[in-house]
Every structure is written in structure tokens, then in C-alpha cells.
View 1 (cartoon, rainbow, N blue to C red):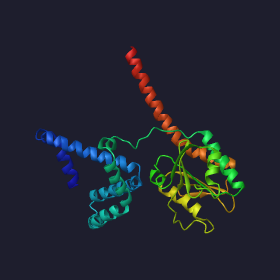
View 2 (view 1 turned 90 degrees about the vertical axis):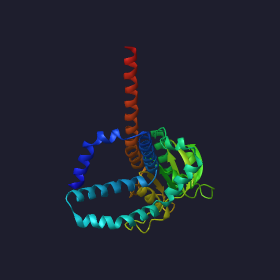
View 3 (view 1 turned 60 degrees about the vertical axis):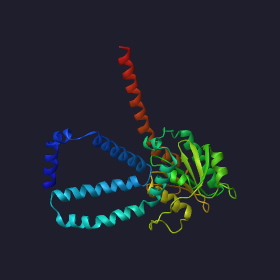
View 4 (view 1 turned 60 degrees about the horizontal axis):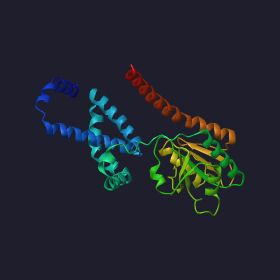
Length: 295
């Protein structure tokens, strides 16, 4: 309770602190706030965002432990803290390196202003039909395929490992990409909105021991990317021609055209509805402003 009392005392004396602050203190607060904002924007587009949510849970648990004076837990946390910071640096080394490289390449203002926020490009029913048609056609001739559909978590790190395509999703394009003995057939295709953004992309392999031993690298890569993001991965087996879907670390196998279409529409509709709601809210706000002006 001592720390809680200190917070209460600080809030009571807040007006006093305001009288002794100068311009330098205000600028310092703004700079720190800007840095924190930039770090959060950067983390939103990386795996560090999921890690941050886990750290928040641990922080909440330690806060409860401090309130109830669980001294053993607090002592363990204090001794582990130094090791934990080093472990975080090691775990996030690739992300930190890319962030510093981007900071060196770009203008500071373009990094501070949320450049990672992109205008939403809808995932239409026509795109679903094209993907389903392509997978069924490739399954008939046993052409292996790995199609990753991006949702809210950015897959830009994996896009960089492939070759840029930037083409509208059509069944002909997908079939041609995965045709055997063609330059782009090896690796995964990443779909963002209604466009194929890259091909021959490398994905992380799942180390889930519960997966069947008969599954090959293609299926393990599909499950692996679904474990580190909210993406949906459609897999066509080269050996059997059967179509599977990996989502949230789970693999659904032997899907027919109707089941695949239903799965994609159901799991992609959530993102569409959220963005439509946001757009409707903005439009209503604009209409209200227009009415006020007209009055």
C-alpha cells in the first residue's frame, strides 16, 4: 500500500509540480511521448506487439503481487529482471536491426507520422472465388501451393524475402506462379487485400509436435506463419492434391471448394466489418459537421 499512497500524494501535489516546470521540461515530456508513440507504432507491425501484450499481463500480475505484499514473488522478479532485459534484446534482435535500418534510410518525420498505417484494401468475394478456383484446379493436377492471406498483422518481413509481384488475384495468376519448373513456384505467395504482393516468400516452420508426421515442409510452413500472425494460409498438397487451411496454429485438412469458400469468407469478414464500421463512423461525423455548417 505504500506505493499506492505515494501515487495519491503525487496527484495531490500535482499543481505544485506544475508551477516549477519550465519550457525545457515540457519539451522533454513531448519528446519522450513522441518516442513512446513511435515505438508502439513500430511494434504494432512486428511480432513484438504480441510480446508486449504478454509483458503487460506479467506487469499486472506483479502489480497485484505488490499490493498484497507477495515478497517472494517480488524478490524473484527483481532478480530475473536483468536477465529478462538481455533476453528481450536477443529475441527482438532482427526487429531492432530492421527498425534502426529504416530509421537511417527514411526521413525522421515520415517515421514519426504513422507510415505503417495504410488505407484498407478490401478482401472481396471475387478474390475468394479466384483463390478457391485456383486451389481446386491445382489440386486436380497435384500442383503444390502455399497461399498466405494477410489480415491485421503485417507480413512485410516475409514479403521482403520473396519477389515483388503486385498483381490482382486471379486463378490464372496463382496457377501460373505455382506451375512446376517455373521461377516463382518455390515458396509462398502472400496476398494483401485483393492483390498478390509477393511470391517465393520464405515462412517460419512450425515446431508443433502434435502435427502429423506425414505432413511435409509446405504444411509446417503454413502452420508456422499462422502461429506468429493472424494470417490465413491455404495449402495444396503436391502428393495428394488435397487442400488444407492453417489458421491460429490449427490445420484444417481435406477441404472441398464449398468448405474452403465458407472458411475464407467467415474468417475474413471480421476484418471487413471492423473497417466498414470505422468508415461509417467517419462518414457520420463528416455528415454531422456538414449539417452544422448548413445550419
